[in-house]
Image (cartoon, rainbow, N blue to C red; front, side):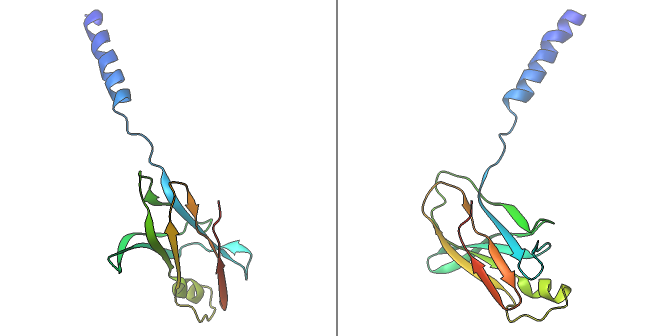
Length: 135
């Protein structure tokens, strides 16, 4: 009886391994550093949009984690070329910090031209921000 179950067990195990999903990799990540505190900005809503026919289409939305990061924007495909923007909804973040800010949100527009990783972080204060392409 055991001889009958072993091949079946092997087939089930092999089948599960053969059809296991490959891990998803992402082409775009971001990070927010609050330069007033020198710490990451957690729980900030960040929206990713893509320009199509001169209109913006929302692709996804996420909140920064405790390290101020979102690492799972834009699943890696063979061609994500185009113009995108990240919209950081900073007004609620500053309100939670009991700070007044002139920036209810920050928009960063950028272009993906290569099949490499793009890290688009911002450094942020209540009265200013800066962005760059990180790694």
